[in-house]
Image (spheres, rainbow, N blue to C red):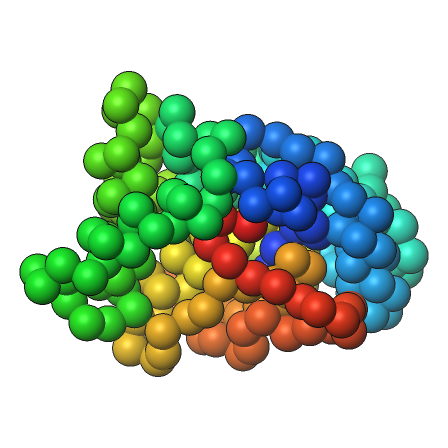
Length: 228
């Protein structure tokens, strides 16, 4: 038996639009964010989901709700909130201006000690977030990876013997980091667009990638940055 997971990034938020670092800080979906979630829902209306999970942050939960409103198999009432699916914790860096924070972090990535591959650069980014948090509340790379891989494996194993298809709605850095940690040999994964879809399967403790960042909503001007 196999678990098939549709992993989607939440729709655009007010902080995404304004290029503000979010992390565990929440922000409402914009009209564009609601529209992309609704379009995702229409595209997936006939997918026979057996269960649905979302980060407990409202931007992910609300996106999942809009996706499931037109679904022929589940409804928003079926969504299970899971805080382990949250975005990386930026600690006290939340509220910072994204491009300025990105410039700081890129200086760490360009250091000669950083391996020149997707995993090495991403690890340097996340660890730098921790380094720049004066109150040391942010997660480092290993803490983040352990949390999200455990969460995804727990969901997958729960449904593996049942041959289920699962909806999971989470966050940009979470999805990028999960794919980088799980499939490091495949490619350097870009940041996922708001409303983008990744598909993968899980069988007997083995993950297989099917797709990454599909634009099923067909929204114009799809932007993607780690801080968004």
